[in-house]
Each structure stands twice: as structure tokens, then as C-alpha cells.
Image (cartoon, rainbow, N blue to C red; front, side, top):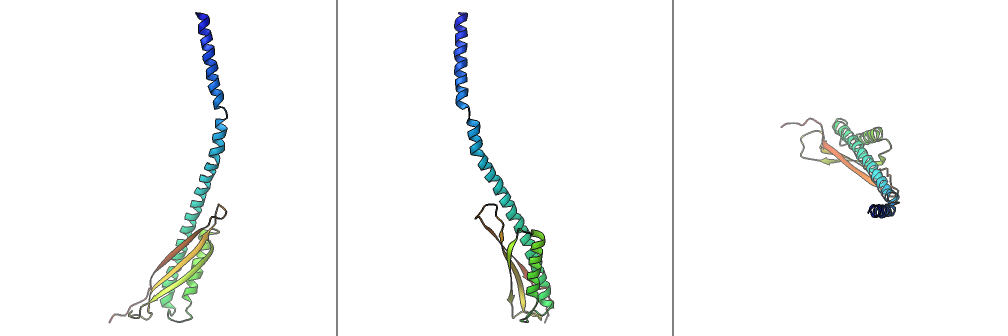
Length: 163
């Protein structure tokens, strides 16, 4: 009986080794399949971080430009055709965007706009000033482009005459 027990263990051992041989190479296949997915996930994370940082920098820049426009529009003759406040607002936006965003705010297009209110009881009839920025964000993936559109504005800071 002792001889039978030894043979059974040997057969069981060979069967177990046969199963292990079937699994050989699975780690390499899993590595080959999962590594590109992990790299894709990592690159998507970097792209998302670039987009969020660029959007934050653009938002801060547009708010700075809107503040400049609101301050200067009433003080420097807002209704003149040659008013300098729109250009000063654009310069404030582009300068701040380059300071904060660096190379992340690519080719910004900045526009200023205003709303006239003839009923306004003030020297300047502009009631609202807005500044907007449109820009591209650098891409980690070729051919994949993201854009940023940010707007900011507010009422003009000026004294209003009371009747």
C-alpha cells in the first residue's frame, strides 16, 4: 500500500505542474495589454490638469482686464470713439495671461464690449462692460485640441447724479 500512495502523489504532483505550465506567460500578456491603458490614463490626467490650469489662468486674466475696463472707462471719457480703455483692458488680459499661464494660454483672442444705457443718469452712458478671452490649450495627444472661452464683466464704476 505504501507503493500505491507514492504513485498517487506523483501523479497528483504531475497534474498540478501541468496546470502551472498552462498559466505561464499570462503575466507577460497582462503586462502587454494593461501597460498602454495605464499610459493612456496617465496622459489623460496630465491633459486634464493642463486644461484646468490654463482655464484658471485665463479666468484670472479676464477678471483683471474687466477690472481695468471698469475703472478706466468712466475716468477717461468712455463715449469717445478713440477711448483708450478697451486697448488697456486687452493689454491687461494678455499680460496677466502670459504671467500666469505661460505657454498654456496659446494665441489668446481678447475682446471688449459694452452696453449703452441712455436712461442712465451719469456722465458716461455705459452701464456694463464685458471682457472675453478665447484661447487654445496645448495638447498631449496629437490632433486633440481643447479651447477655453472665459467672460467677465460688471457695471461701470462712476458717480451717478441723483435728481
